[in-house]
Length: 66
Image: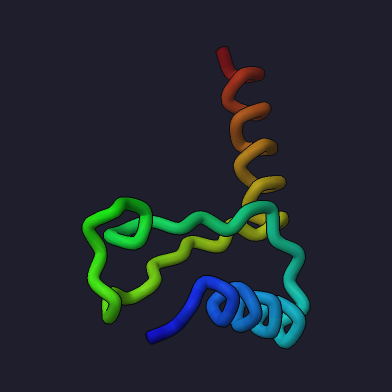
């Protein structure tokens, strides 16, 4: 069994190792509700800053095309 504290510590370690600035970390899947099992996996999506900047630029360009 992996506790929430262990998962957060591992995420911090990974972020330090890869040195990528992130915008947000999202948890999804069964762990977001109350129906997960003790052995359920942890599903994350890490949104990195460069992706957010790219999406903002794309949205701004789309607005200019209108």
